[in-house]
Length: 340
Ligand code: NAD
Ligand code: UD1
Image (cartoon, rainbow, N blue to C red):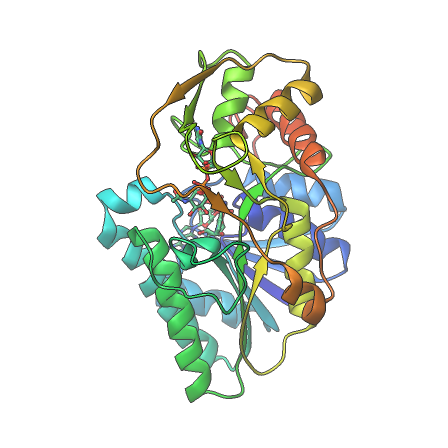
């Protein structure tokens, strides 16, 4: 298949590109590089021994999308392009709604114009807002979101359901990721957030390599076994394989699936496992709860297993080992590495 990945130069998109190439699909990437480097794609090409067709452009621009769809036939789209910082979305909601919602509307319009009917969308467990029960299954309530980023994912899912009602030939699957982590085991591609990391693992790695003094632990008084927050971390390669399975099972209609492991780990369990894997000591600093955090966020991944034949196979140790390998081999991310 010719598969277009919007946002394919990013953290998760680059891993999906690699998995697709390894399954002998043709990969076309459209990315404006606002949060990524084209070197990720060069590395994917080197790892796979195959070529990617790369277009630098913006999903909000009709001309950019038309250029991509006119250049080669597209069989399916994996729509990853979007902004993903919860904090930034609270400061700049218009920017988030513009990018994540208006960009998706433009993509849907151009797909219709070019009669492309297959779409996989990067959604998030954030659509569940404060969990109504644990573990979260697909028919739990959604929409009780607490920030514009989460609201944008919820609204896009809703829009996609309505568009499918109006265009029954469309096959759309939204994948709700829990907490993506890890990197390709080669250490060649991975995640490198700019500035001070908001998320646990990137922060922890920077403490471990001496860039930061200690790891703030946000809350030790939650109703969890050790009082710290519990999350369902999922290896990015498992996520990538989930997209391939979703693509293989696409059929007309709108569907959504959790992509998680169903297994939760607390902040302190993560620190402990990381210390074992890396041999590094990570000093922690117990702080107050972070506003907006919940005690536990955990998936029931049963529906994806039943309907897509997918389940995560990599555990926490592999996530931490692979991410740490990427981090130690690329302390500045893609910066300072070879140019194109
Ligand atoms: P990322 O920032 O690494 O990748 C997103 C890519 O989209 C980047 O390469 C960026 O340059 C590109 N992009 C952004 N706006 C664009 C636009 N208007 N036009 C073209 N390209 C654009 O993030 P990621 O972690 O790989 O996330 C990918 C998707 O998965 C996002 O939609 C994100 O919201 C979603 N998601 C991520 C997580 C996570 O924790 N990483 C969790 C749930 C959902
Ligand atoms: C956040 C986003 C979610 C996004 C996900 C991955 C919110 C409400 N949700 O999830 O939409 O999909 O990131 O990008 O922001 N922690 C610390 N110290 C730190 C950082 C985090 O103790 O320095 C704790 C948090 O309190 C939480 C756990 O680690 O218990 C995981 O936090 P984080 O990695 O930020 O992910 P989420 O908050 O679960």
